[in-house]
Image (cartoon, rainbow, N blue to C red; front, side, top):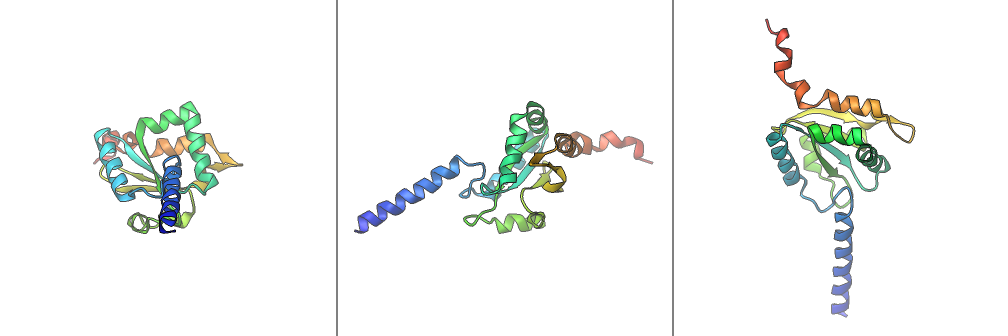
Length: 164
């Protein structure tokens, strides 16, 4: 009986893990480590990190991913300036410390978007509801959001005319 119980638990855990690897959000991921790697990659590529916080249970989270990856213009805009990370929030992984570190952006609901610079500094938190339209997202608003926070527009060299 012990062998059967062990086998049942093993199969259940393997199924959860296999499902997680096929999912957008990974409950078993080490979010702190993954975000640190995304920041390092963003710095090396002169990009920002776009964190999409949510979960596989969130229809708006899945819709944003579908919306931005199936449209060539959207996909290009993201890939040109951002390293994307999907920060999971679920019963298996609430990532309390990560949400705390960024000022509890989950207070806006899910998904919520965080923009980090190449040093890991939080430079913007975006409430998803301002980008939504109908049962999806407004392309013009999402492209505007992405354009407003890309590294080039935040480079002080572009604003030399403001210096004394």
